[in-house]
Image 1 (cartoon, rainbow, N blue to C red):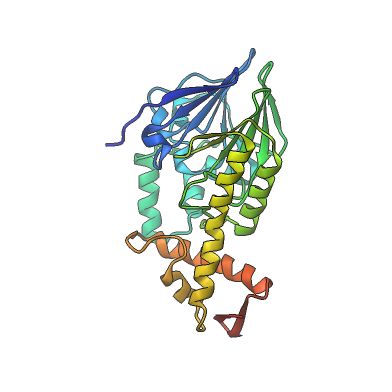
Image 2: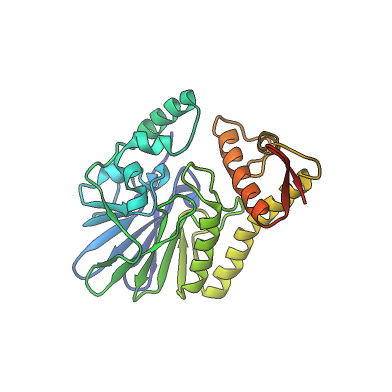
Length: 297
């Protein structure tokens, strides 16, 4: 049985991180409660909040993945997400479709989202865009669009506290994830560059790494996180010493370790391989020696 419960950690005058079970490791996540003199909002009500969610006047969702919305049913307040992720937030069927799974696996995933993560869909949810500002009274929350993980993935800059929530740019050793149908390696790289340009005191992540204090420490962690992409490139180039197909690259795996099994593995590996191949082809580091077969240049 999945447990609930969270630990509160305060930052500045009105930011409280609700650290999820297991330090926010999936299937849990870290949520953020932001309080002004007029209103309070919650960002990403996670599984750990189910049954004990703090009150809020507004719910913001960084992106439409199940671990970031599991306690959404505890709120009758208005819900908003980026316009690019709005359809998936409104409909569980659209969310499942975005994972790009085989039909049988998609059906099982739909049940898992319903029963394990309480995902029901919020058809009344509305959309925000990059730069949208929510004024809570003496405290603002500004949307920072950080696509790549999903098309609508966003961070939120909270002022005057200087707290930037970067959601699933989560700095974990697993590295960046861009394996969904709407994901983008190129956009993920651009989003990480944008994060570097934002001067904040604290950088909050949705999962195990929690909150990083200071731009220098955050940049160092971000370097290591982004470095996983370079390692995937290196693995791919070594494998392409001989001509290979996309299916062969997917079977070799760039993302998951060999012991990880499940119907999601090969679809994610294939989409990831295709994106790395495309980028390396554009850079002249890989050539297509015959239709559908690729080799390191």
